[in-house]
Each structure stands twice: as structure tokens, then as C-alpha cells.
Amino acid sequence: MPLIRLFLDVALFNKGPRDVPASIFLLGLVAATNLAVALALALLDVDWLEGIAQSLVGIGLLAGFLWIVLVLAHQTPRYLQTFTAALGCDTLISALALPLLVWSRWSGESRELVLTVVTLLLLWQIAIIGHVLRQALSSSYALGLGLALAYMAGSVELMDLLFSNPG
Image (cartoon, rainbow, N blue to C red; front, side):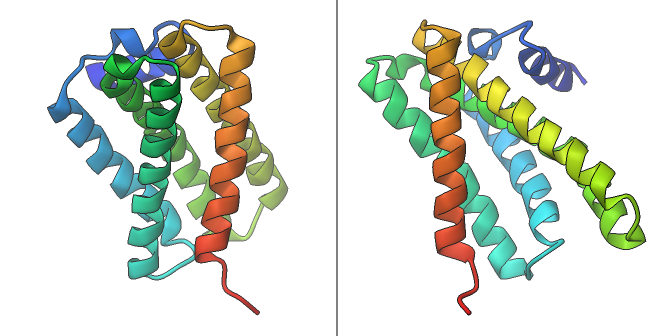
């Protein structure tokens, strides 16, 4: 529970990546949890193999984006904490969306409500990434939010390019 509380505090803008322990073990734990949650979400639409691929690519896109941004800003010593914070918050948001999406798929009811809530969760995720980047870069929230929007748009496009079914 302390880890959930830590990532919730980051997601609520009470803490930042500097408050996340710089631990490879913690990053591995968070990455494994994220992989499990992302896979559960992916399996609502695709088979196991594609679900695993989508989940791993999603983690890789976040890892690569953060690395590039921190290299360009000469802030690579902050990478481990920044990636762990962003991935932990992504896991938290995805875990919140999962039961809503499962319920919507199986019940067929309230799709508009679920779509609205999931859209709000996505906007919150963008705001969180902006917050994490602002602190990691010691910059303005506007810059962090702009980078977060660029990341989200780019990752959606790349995932669509890699995993959309032609036809």
C-alpha cells in the first residue's frame, strides 16, 4: 500500500519523481505490474501475442521518450526516478480504467458514461506526465504539459501504425 500511496501522491501533484526511490528493483516491480495491467486492457481487444507486444511497446515508448527528453535537457541522472514515477502513475490510471472497461464490454451498458470517465482519466494521465516532466526538467508546467501532449499524440500514432489492422 505505501507504493500505491506514493504514486497516488504523484498523480495528485503532491509529490514528484524526486520523491520516488531511485531503485532498479522498484522500477522492475512497477514495470511488471504495468505489463500485467496493460496486458489485461489489451486482451479486451486483441489476442495474447498482440497484447503482450502492445504492452511491451507501450512501456518502451515511455522509456524512450523520457530518455530522449532527459538527455536533451542534460538531466539523465533523474531518469530512473522519472521513469518509475511516470510508469507507476500510468499503472495506477490504467488500473482505474480496467474495471470500467471490463464492465462496459460485458454489460453493454453506459458506454457513454464509461467513455467520458476514460477520457477524463486520459486527460489526467497527460496532466500527470506534464507534472512529472516539469519536476524532472526543473521547468515550467507549460513545457511539461506540452511535452506530455506530444508524447501522447506520438505514442497513439505509433501504436496505431504498428498494431492497426489494414483493411
